[in-house]
Image (cartoon, rainbow, N blue to C red; front, side):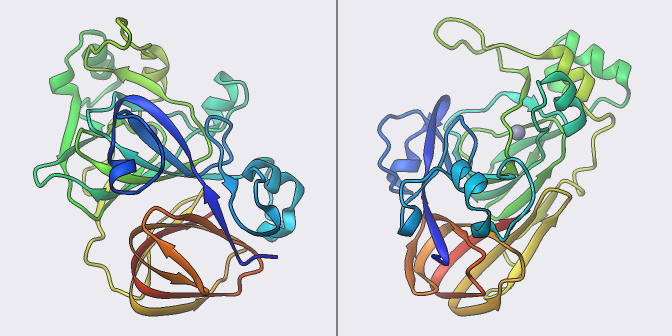
Length: 311
Ligand code: ZN
């Protein structure tokens, strides 16, 4: 079996998307509204297929259910994680995700969504929406029902290399100009709280006010507990950015050579900058792959940055 499975990504076109996934990441996707590259995905909305080796052409969901050996016989009905690169040319809607319990009950057994962001690029004065300023459930309802968005929304400055964990119940939104890598549970359940009164095809997009009020955590976690600077972490070292029930996420910046034993059954890896090789296979910025159970040692050479995760 191959040590590394390279994946063909899927794409989603959105009102806030741009062209950078083609011009800077060299994906052959037409259009000027490319919002998301679903790099490692077994989700039916945009699924990855294997590029190389014995399983070339196979969908990731099929591989997960029919070839458990690839993943070291890891448990679970569905492939657990999803990696995306997001190019926000314009602001995304203000949104929140449910947890597993709420999603199971209200969304036909779907998974909840815990996600995290690694900022790949942004303007010097960039901001994101993380959390809100309501201090009680009453204040939350008042701000949302009465459209007090300026008071409600908590906008914080971010820079390249910042890492942001977004637990279910966290109000969040990507602002225009930001390019980021998202690692998340394999779910697409999003409740939109506010969409800046924008129109798509002449109509406002659907909002989910009641569901949002149900799931938003009050008060929000502190800013310090929501964001972590990762730009200056050590080179040639697996830097753990976050560990939670659903995933561990690592940043690895290689300058020269890096080698380590692979201690988990399988890992997701995306090259976010530079080029080089992994276990002898050439890789470059924008490549997405899975380190399979057959891989015992991770050996990286070159000048490149990777974001990795395991479930
Ligand atoms: Zn989200």
